[in-house]
Amino acid sequence: MRLYNLKNHDEEVNFETAVKLGLGQQQGLFFPVKLPVIKLKDLSEILKMDFITRSTEILSKFIYNEISKEQLYIHVKKAFSFKYPLLKSITKTISCFELFHGPTLAFKDFGARFMAQMIFSMNKNNDLVTILTATSGDTGAAVAHAFYGMKNVRVVILYPKGKISALQEKLFCTLGKNIKTISINGSFDDCQKLVKEAFNDKKLKNSIGLNSANSINISRLLAQICYYFEAFSLLPKEKRNNLVIAVPCGNFGNLTAGLLAKSLGLPIKSFIACTNSNDTVPRFLQNGQWQPKKTVSTISNAMDISQPNNWPRIQELFQRKKWNLKELRFGSVSDEVTKNTLQELFELGYVSEPHAAIAYRILKNQLKKDEFGLFLGTAHPAKFKNTVEQILNNNIVLPQELKNTINLPFLSHNMNPDFKKLKQFLIKE
Ligand SMILES: *Cc1c(COP(=O)(O)O)cnc(C)c1O
Image 1 (cartoon, rainbow, N blue to C red):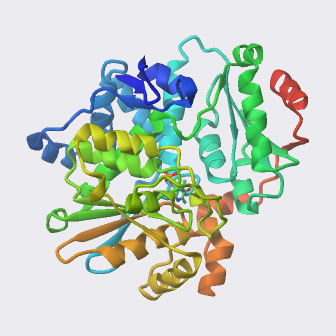
Image 2: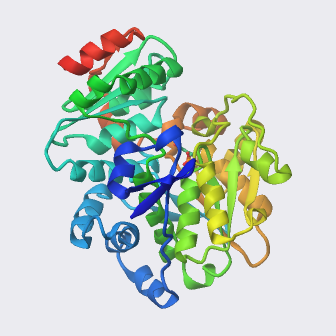
Protein backbone atom coordinates (compact mmCIF):
# COMPACT_ATOMS: atom_id res chain seq x y z
CA MET A 1 0.00 0.00 0.00
CA ARG A 2 1.36 3.42 -0.94
CA LEU A 3 0.45 6.53 0.99
CA TYR A 4 1.25 10.18 0.32
CA ASN A 5 1.71 13.05 2.71
CA LEU A 6 -1.19 15.51 2.42
CA LYS A 7 1.20 18.42 3.02
CA ASN A 8 3.82 17.26 0.53
CA HIS A 9 2.59 14.85 -2.12
CA ASP A 10 6.19 14.01 -3.07
CA GLU A 11 6.65 12.16 0.19
CA GLU A 12 5.33 8.69 -0.48
CA VAL A 13 5.73 5.73 1.86
CA ASN A 14 4.49 2.17 2.27
CA PHE A 15 2.09 1.02 4.99
CA GLU A 16 4.85 -0.15 7.32
CA THR A 17 6.61 3.22 7.23
CA ALA A 18 3.35 5.12 7.67
CA VAL A 19 2.53 3.03 10.74
CA LYS A 20 5.99 3.54 12.22
CA LEU A 21 6.16 7.27 11.48
CA GLY A 22 2.58 8.19 12.32
CA LEU A 23 2.97 11.59 10.64
CA GLY A 24 5.02 12.67 7.64
CA GLN A 25 7.17 15.76 7.12
CA GLN A 26 5.69 19.03 8.39
CA GLN A 27 3.30 16.94 10.51
CA GLY A 28 1.41 15.95 7.33
CA LEU A 29 -1.15 13.11 7.41
CA PHE A 30 -0.69 10.03 5.25
CA PHE A 31 -3.44 9.17 2.75
CA PRO A 32 -3.79 6.12 0.44
CA VAL A 33 -2.69 6.58 -3.19
CA LYS A 34 -5.23 3.96 -4.30
CA LEU A 35 -8.73 3.77 -2.89
CA PRO A 36 -9.86 0.18 -3.36
CA VAL A 37 -13.46 -0.58 -4.34
CA ILE A 38 -15.41 -3.76 -3.63
CA LYS A 39 -17.49 -4.86 -6.62
CA LEU A 40 -21.22 -4.99 -6.07
CA LYS A 41 -21.37 -8.73 -6.71
CA ASP A 42 -18.65 -9.34 -4.08
CA LEU A 43 -20.31 -7.13 -1.52
CA SER A 44 -23.11 -9.55 -0.64
CA GLU A 45 -20.52 -12.32 -0.18
CA ILE A 46 -18.44 -10.13 2.09
CA LEU A 47 -21.45 -9.16 4.16
CA LYS A 48 -22.22 -12.83 4.81
CA MET A 49 -18.79 -13.52 6.33
CA ASP A 50 -18.09 -13.57 10.06
CA PHE A 51 -16.57 -10.42 11.56
CA ILE A 52 -12.94 -11.63 11.60
CA THR A 53 -12.93 -13.11 8.09
CA ARG A 54 -14.71 -10.07 6.66
CA SER A 55 -12.41 -7.62 8.44
CA THR A 56 -9.39 -9.50 7.08
CA GLU A 57 -10.84 -9.22 3.55
CA ILE A 58 -11.41 -5.49 3.92
CA LEU A 59 -7.99 -4.71 5.40
CA SER A 60 -6.38 -6.92 2.80
CA LYS A 61 -7.79 -4.66 0.04
CA PHE A 62 -5.40 -2.01 1.34
CA ILE A 63 -2.37 -3.89 2.63
CA TYR A 64 -2.32 -7.17 0.66
CA ASN A 65 1.13 -6.58 -0.80
CA GLU A 66 2.77 -6.06 2.60
CA ILE A 67 1.01 -8.64 4.78
CA SER A 68 -0.38 -11.95 3.53
CA LYS A 69 -4.04 -12.69 4.14
CA GLU A 70 -3.18 -15.66 6.36
CA GLN A 71 -0.93 -13.53 8.53
CA LEU A 72 -3.41 -10.68 8.61
CA TYR A 73 -6.19 -13.03 9.74
CA ILE A 74 -4.12 -14.00 12.78
CA HIS A 75 -3.54 -10.35 13.71
CA VAL A 76 -7.16 -9.33 13.18
CA LYS A 77 -8.32 -12.24 15.31
CA LYS A 78 -6.01 -11.19 18.14
CA ALA A 79 -6.90 -7.51 17.80
CA PHE A 80 -10.67 -8.02 17.79
CA SER A 81 -10.71 -10.70 20.48
CA PHE A 82 -13.51 -9.20 22.53
CA LYS A 83 -17.27 -8.94 22.41
CA TYR A 84 -18.26 -7.63 18.98
CA PRO A 85 -20.34 -4.52 18.45
CA LEU A 86 -24.10 -4.82 18.92
CA LEU A 87 -27.17 -3.16 17.49
CA LYS A 88 -29.72 -1.90 20.01
CA SER A 89 -33.09 -0.82 18.73
CA ILE A 90 -34.23 2.52 20.14
CA THR A 91 -37.24 3.48 18.00
CA LYS A 92 -38.80 1.97 14.87
CA THR A 93 -36.38 3.86 12.66
CA ILE A 94 -33.33 4.38 14.90
CA SER A 95 -30.82 1.99 16.44
CA CYS A 96 -27.63 2.48 18.40
CA PHE A 97 -24.54 0.68 17.14
CA GLU A 98 -22.66 -0.07 20.36
CA LEU A 99 -18.91 -0.10 19.89
CA PHE A 100 -18.01 -0.13 23.56
CA HIS A 101 -17.77 -3.78 24.52
CA GLY A 102 -13.96 -3.97 24.36
CA PRO A 103 -11.56 -4.10 27.32
CA THR A 104 -11.58 -0.35 27.91
CA LEU A 105 -15.25 0.16 27.05
CA ALA A 106 -14.81 2.59 24.14
CA PHE A 107 -14.58 2.21 20.36
CA LYS A 108 -10.90 3.21 20.56
CA ASP A 109 -10.13 -0.43 21.46
CA PHE A 110 -10.59 -1.42 17.79
CA GLY A 111 -8.01 0.99 16.40
CA ALA A 112 -5.53 0.75 19.26
CA ARG A 113 -5.52 -3.04 19.32
CA PHE A 114 -5.06 -3.41 15.57
CA MET A 115 -2.28 -0.81 15.62
CA ALA A 116 -0.57 -2.75 18.43
CA GLN A 117 -0.73 -5.92 16.33
CA MET A 118 0.80 -4.10 13.37
CA ILE A 119 3.64 -2.51 15.36
CA PHE A 120 4.37 -5.88 16.97
CA SER A 121 4.44 -7.72 13.64
CA MET A 122 6.68 -5.09 12.03
CA ASN A 123 9.31 -5.49 14.74
CA LYS A 124 11.07 -8.34 12.94
CA ASN A 125 14.41 -7.97 14.74
CA ASN A 126 12.81 -8.09 18.17
CA ASP A 127 14.25 -4.70 19.06
CA LEU A 128 13.01 -2.92 22.13
CA VAL A 129 10.06 -0.70 21.19
CA THR A 130 8.94 2.04 23.57
CA ILE A 131 5.50 3.46 23.05
CA LEU A 132 5.45 6.87 24.73
CA THR A 133 2.14 8.64 24.84
CA ALA A 134 0.33 11.39 26.72
CA THR A 135 -3.31 10.95 27.57
CA SER A 136 -6.16 12.88 29.05
CA GLY A 137 -8.16 9.68 29.50
CA ASP A 138 -9.52 7.20 26.98
CA THR A 139 -6.63 6.82 24.57
CA GLY A 140 -4.16 5.85 27.30
CA ALA A 141 -6.35 3.04 28.51
CA ALA A 142 -6.95 1.68 25.02
CA VAL A 143 -3.24 1.82 24.13
CA ALA A 144 -2.16 0.26 27.44
CA HIS A 145 -4.52 -2.69 27.08
CA ALA A 146 -3.67 -3.12 23.40
CA PHE A 147 0.05 -3.63 24.09
CA TYR A 148 -0.32 -5.37 27.44
CA GLY A 149 1.94 -8.42 27.75
CA MET A 150 3.58 -7.98 24.30
CA LYS A 151 7.18 -9.11 24.09
CA ASN A 152 9.85 -6.44 23.48
CA VAL A 153 7.29 -3.66 23.72
CA ARG A 154 7.18 -1.27 26.62
CA VAL A 155 4.45 1.33 27.01
CA VAL A 156 5.00 4.53 28.98
CA ILE A 157 1.92 6.66 29.55
CA LEU A 158 2.00 10.19 30.95
CA TYR A 159 -1.14 11.76 32.36
CA PRO A 160 -1.91 14.89 34.39
CA LYS A 161 -2.20 14.06 38.07
CA GLY A 162 -5.70 14.55 39.44
CA LYS A 163 -7.15 15.57 36.07
CA ILE A 164 -8.63 12.28 34.91
CA SER A 165 -11.43 10.36 36.56
CA ALA A 166 -10.58 7.75 39.20
CA LEU A 167 -12.29 5.12 37.09
CA GLN A 168 -10.25 6.00 34.01
CA GLU A 169 -7.05 5.94 36.05
CA LYS A 170 -7.91 2.47 37.37
CA LEU A 171 -8.31 1.19 33.84
CA PHE A 172 -4.68 1.67 32.86
CA CYS A 173 -2.63 2.29 36.01
CA THR A 174 -3.23 -1.14 37.53
CA LEU A 175 -1.89 -3.32 34.72
CA GLY A 176 1.83 -3.54 35.52
CA LYS A 177 4.17 -5.79 33.48
CA ASN A 178 5.19 -3.87 30.34
CA ILE A 179 2.82 -0.95 31.02
CA LYS A 180 4.43 1.94 32.94
CA THR A 181 2.31 4.89 33.93
CA ILE A 182 3.49 8.22 35.28
CA SER A 183 1.26 10.87 36.76
CA ILE A 184 2.75 14.27 35.99
CA ASN A 185 2.37 17.17 38.42
CA GLY A 186 1.03 19.46 35.72
CA SER A 187 -1.47 19.76 32.88
CA PHE A 188 -2.15 17.61 29.81
CA ASP A 189 -0.13 20.13 27.79
CA ASP A 190 2.86 19.54 30.11
CA CYS A 191 2.56 15.83 29.36
CA GLN A 192 2.46 16.44 25.62
CA LYS A 193 5.45 18.72 25.85
CA LEU A 194 7.47 15.99 27.57
CA VAL A 195 6.53 13.52 24.82
CA LYS A 196 7.65 16.03 22.16
CA GLU A 197 10.97 16.60 23.93
CA ALA A 198 11.60 12.86 24.01
CA PHE A 199 10.93 12.58 20.27
CA ASN A 200 13.26 15.50 19.54
CA ASP A 201 16.09 13.72 21.38
CA LYS A 202 17.40 11.66 18.43
CA LYS A 203 19.88 9.66 20.50
CA LEU A 204 17.29 8.70 23.06
CA LYS A 205 14.79 7.97 20.32
CA ASN A 206 17.05 5.45 18.64
CA SER A 207 18.37 3.81 21.78
CA ILE A 208 14.92 2.97 23.17
CA GLY A 209 12.99 2.62 19.88
CA LEU A 210 10.49 5.39 20.49
CA ASN A 211 7.11 5.21 18.73
CA SER A 212 4.15 7.47 19.38
CA ALA A 213 1.19 5.21 18.52
CA ASN A 214 -0.96 8.30 18.36
CA SER A 215 -4.46 8.70 17.13
CA ILE A 216 -3.70 9.81 13.57
CA ASN A 217 -1.97 6.51 12.79
CA ILE A 218 -3.30 5.09 9.52
CA SER A 219 -3.57 1.58 10.99
CA ARG A 220 -6.21 2.79 13.42
CA LEU A 221 -8.39 4.23 10.68
CA LEU A 222 -8.22 1.08 8.59
CA ALA A 223 -9.28 -1.04 11.57
CA GLN A 224 -12.27 1.20 12.19
CA ILE A 225 -13.60 0.71 8.65
CA CYS A 226 -14.38 -2.90 9.58
CA TYR A 227 -17.14 -2.22 12.07
CA TYR A 228 -19.17 -0.15 9.60
CA PHE A 229 -19.45 -3.30 7.48
CA GLU A 230 -20.46 -5.20 10.60
CA ALA A 231 -23.21 -2.67 11.32
CA PHE A 232 -24.54 -3.07 7.80
CA SER A 233 -24.43 -6.87 7.97
CA LEU A 234 -26.43 -6.86 11.22
CA LEU A 235 -29.24 -4.78 9.74
CA PRO A 236 -32.23 -6.56 8.22
CA LYS A 237 -32.48 -6.01 4.44
CA GLU A 238 -35.40 -3.57 4.61
CA LYS A 239 -33.36 -1.18 6.77
CA ARG A 240 -30.33 -1.06 4.50
CA ASN A 241 -31.71 1.04 1.67
CA ASN A 242 -31.62 4.58 2.98
CA LEU A 243 -29.16 4.24 5.77
CA VAL A 244 -27.98 7.35 7.62
CA ILE A 245 -25.20 7.09 10.21
CA ALA A 246 -24.66 9.76 12.88
CA VAL A 247 -21.12 9.90 14.28
CA PRO A 248 -20.10 11.70 17.49
CA CYS A 249 -16.95 13.55 16.38
CA GLY A 250 -13.85 14.81 18.17
CA ASN A 251 -10.77 14.36 16.01
CA PHE A 252 -12.98 12.98 13.21
CA GLY A 253 -11.16 9.65 12.93
CA ASN A 254 -14.32 7.64 13.35
CA LEU A 255 -16.12 9.60 10.63
CA THR A 256 -13.09 9.29 8.30
CA ALA A 257 -13.26 5.50 8.70
CA GLY A 258 -16.99 5.52 7.93
CA LEU A 259 -16.45 7.54 4.77
CA LEU A 260 -13.67 5.15 3.73
CA ALA A 261 -16.17 2.29 4.18
CA LYS A 262 -18.52 4.15 1.85
CA SER A 263 -15.74 4.73 -0.65
CA LEU A 264 -15.08 0.97 -0.64
CA GLY A 265 -18.65 0.50 -1.82
CA LEU A 266 -20.68 0.06 1.35
CA PRO A 267 -24.01 1.66 0.37
CA ILE A 268 -24.48 4.19 3.15
CA LYS A 269 -26.72 7.03 2.00
CA SER A 270 -25.47 9.75 4.34
CA PHE A 271 -23.29 10.51 7.31
CA ILE A 272 -23.97 13.14 9.93
CA ALA A 273 -20.95 14.82 11.55
CA CYS A 274 -22.10 15.50 15.12
CA THR A 275 -20.26 17.72 17.57
CA ASN A 276 -20.80 19.43 20.92
CA SER A 277 -20.28 23.21 21.24
CA ASN A 278 -16.78 22.73 19.80
CA ASP A 279 -18.37 23.12 16.38
CA THR A 280 -15.55 24.16 14.02
CA VAL A 281 -16.63 21.64 11.37
CA PRO A 282 -20.39 22.30 11.46
CA ARG A 283 -19.71 26.03 11.11
CA PHE A 284 -17.30 25.33 8.27
CA LEU A 285 -19.87 23.20 6.45
CA GLN A 286 -22.42 25.96 6.98
CA ASN A 287 -20.42 28.96 5.77
CA GLY A 288 -17.17 27.69 4.24
CA GLN A 289 -15.02 29.48 6.81
CA TRP A 290 -12.48 27.52 8.87
CA GLN A 291 -12.55 29.44 12.13
CA PRO A 292 -11.59 27.34 15.18
CA LYS A 293 -12.52 28.97 18.47
CA LYS A 294 -10.98 28.34 21.86
CA THR A 295 -11.85 24.81 23.01
CA VAL A 296 -14.60 24.77 25.63
CA SER A 297 -15.20 22.07 28.25
CA THR A 298 -18.40 20.05 27.90
CA ILE A 299 -19.90 16.91 29.44
CA SER A 300 -18.94 15.04 26.25
CA ASN A 301 -15.26 15.71 26.92
CA ALA A 302 -13.80 13.22 24.41
CA MET A 303 -15.20 15.56 21.77
CA ASP A 304 -13.75 18.77 23.24
CA ILE A 305 -11.56 19.46 20.23
CA SER A 306 -11.68 22.60 18.13
CA GLN A 307 -8.95 21.73 15.61
CA PRO A 308 -9.85 18.17 14.61
CA ASN A 309 -6.70 16.56 13.23
CA ASN A 310 -8.33 14.13 10.80
CA TRP A 311 -10.36 16.75 8.94
CA PRO A 312 -7.83 17.15 6.07
CA ARG A 313 -8.26 13.45 5.31
CA ILE A 314 -12.02 13.92 4.95
CA GLN A 315 -11.57 16.84 2.58
CA GLU A 316 -9.07 14.83 0.53
CA LEU A 317 -11.44 11.86 0.34
CA PHE A 318 -14.33 14.02 -0.90
CA GLN A 319 -12.07 15.54 -3.52
CA ARG A 320 -10.66 12.21 -4.67
CA LYS A 321 -14.11 10.59 -4.92
CA LYS A 322 -15.64 13.72 -6.50
CA TRP A 323 -18.23 13.77 -3.73
CA ASN A 324 -19.82 17.05 -2.77
CA LEU A 325 -19.11 18.24 0.77
CA LYS A 326 -22.61 19.74 0.74
CA GLU A 327 -23.90 16.19 1.04
CA LEU A 328 -22.22 15.69 4.40
CA ARG A 329 -24.88 16.41 7.00
CA PHE A 330 -23.89 18.02 10.28
CA GLY A 331 -25.13 19.36 13.59
CA SER A 332 -23.97 20.49 17.01
CA VAL A 333 -25.60 20.23 20.42
CA SER A 334 -25.19 22.15 23.69
CA ASP A 335 -24.72 20.50 27.09
CA GLU A 336 -28.27 21.50 28.01
CA VAL A 337 -29.77 19.65 25.06
CA THR A 338 -27.40 16.72 25.61
CA LYS A 339 -28.74 16.33 29.15
CA ASN A 340 -32.37 16.47 27.99
CA THR A 341 -31.59 13.93 25.30
CA LEU A 342 -30.07 11.52 27.82
CA GLN A 343 -33.35 11.74 29.71
CA GLU A 344 -35.36 11.25 26.54
CA LEU A 345 -33.36 8.11 25.74
CA PHE A 346 -33.82 6.89 29.31
CA GLU A 347 -37.57 7.24 28.93
CA LEU A 348 -37.29 5.12 25.79
CA GLY A 349 -35.67 2.46 27.96
CA TYR A 350 -32.06 3.12 26.97
CA VAL A 351 -29.23 4.24 29.23
CA SER A 352 -26.74 6.19 27.12
CA GLU A 353 -23.92 8.65 27.77
CA PRO A 354 -23.24 12.20 26.53
CA HIS A 355 -21.27 11.40 23.31
CA ALA A 356 -23.79 9.00 21.82
CA ALA A 357 -26.69 11.15 23.01
CA ILE A 358 -25.43 14.03 20.86
CA ALA A 359 -25.46 11.82 17.78
CA TYR A 360 -28.93 10.52 18.61
CA ARG A 361 -30.31 14.07 19.03
CA ILE A 362 -29.05 15.27 15.66
CA LEU A 363 -30.05 12.06 13.90
CA LYS A 364 -33.57 12.22 15.34
CA ASN A 365 -33.94 15.85 14.28
CA GLN A 366 -32.70 15.29 10.74
CA LEU A 367 -33.95 11.82 9.78
CA LYS A 368 -36.26 11.97 6.76
CA LYS A 369 -39.17 9.75 5.84
CA ASP A 370 -38.05 6.39 4.43
CA GLU A 371 -34.63 6.69 6.04
CA PHE A 372 -33.26 4.38 8.71
CA GLY A 373 -30.76 5.81 11.19
CA LEU A 374 -27.87 4.48 13.23
CA PHE A 375 -25.96 6.46 15.81
CA LEU A 376 -22.65 5.20 17.12
CA GLY A 377 -22.33 4.31 20.79
CA THR A 378 -18.72 5.31 21.31
CA ALA A 379 -18.34 4.62 25.06
CA HIS A 380 -20.04 2.63 27.80
CA PRO A 381 -22.22 4.81 30.09
CA ALA A 382 -20.27 3.49 33.10
CA LYS A 383 -17.22 5.39 31.83
CA PHE A 384 -19.13 8.58 32.54
CA LYS A 385 -20.84 7.20 35.63
CA ASN A 386 -20.97 10.40 37.69
CA THR A 387 -22.31 12.58 34.88
CA VAL A 388 -24.89 10.05 33.76
CA GLU A 389 -26.07 9.25 37.31
CA GLN A 390 -26.52 12.94 38.06
CA ILE A 391 -28.56 13.57 34.94
CA LEU A 392 -30.71 10.44 35.17
CA ASN A 393 -30.94 10.34 38.93
CA ASN A 394 -30.31 6.64 38.72
CA ASN A 395 -27.54 4.21 39.53
CA ILE A 396 -25.32 2.86 36.77
CA VAL A 397 -24.14 -0.70 37.19
CA LEU A 398 -20.44 -1.15 36.52
CA PRO A 399 -19.64 -3.78 33.90
CA GLN A 400 -17.39 -6.65 34.98
CA GLU A 401 -14.27 -5.15 33.34
CA LEU A 402 -14.44 -2.12 35.61
CA LYS A 403 -15.47 -4.08 38.69
CA ASN A 404 -12.39 -6.25 38.28
CA THR A 405 -10.00 -3.32 38.27
CA ILE A 406 -11.57 -1.21 40.97
CA ASN A 407 -9.85 -3.03 43.84
CA LEU A 408 -6.43 -3.45 42.21
CA PRO A 409 -3.56 -1.34 43.62
CA PHE A 410 -2.26 1.68 41.72
CA LEU A 411 1.13 1.11 40.14
CA SER A 412 1.78 4.64 38.87
CA HIS A 413 4.97 6.58 39.28
CA ASN A 414 4.85 10.31 39.91
CA MET A 415 7.04 13.00 38.45
CA ASN A 416 7.40 16.73 38.04
CA PRO A 417 7.23 17.92 34.42
CA ASP A 418 11.01 17.70 34.07
CA PHE A 419 12.41 16.14 30.90
CA LYS A 420 15.70 15.11 32.58
CA LYS A 421 13.75 13.00 35.04
CA LEU A 422 11.67 11.42 32.30
CA LYS A 423 14.78 10.64 30.26
CA GLN A 424 16.36 8.90 33.25
CA PHE A 425 13.21 6.89 33.71
CA LEU A 426 13.09 5.89 30.05
CA ILE A 427 16.70 4.70 30.06
CA LYS A 428 16.58 2.88 33.40
CA GLU A 429 13.14 1.34 33.84
C1 LIG B 1 -12.51 9.56 21.00
C2 LIG B 1 -13.97 9.63 21.24
C3 LIG B 1 -14.85 10.30 20.36
C4 LIG B 1 -14.37 11.06 19.15
O1 LIG B 1 -13.90 10.21 18.14
P1 LIG B 1 -13.01 10.79 16.95
O2 LIG B 1 -12.62 9.60 16.15
O3 LIG B 1 -11.83 11.47 17.59
O4 LIG B 1 -13.85 11.75 16.19
C5 LIG B 1 -16.21 10.25 20.63
N1 LIG B 1 -16.70 9.63 21.73
C6 LIG B 1 -15.88 8.99 22.60
C7 LIG B 1 -16.48 8.35 23.80
C8 LIG B 1 -14.49 8.97 22.40
O5 LIG B 1 -13.70 8.35 23.29
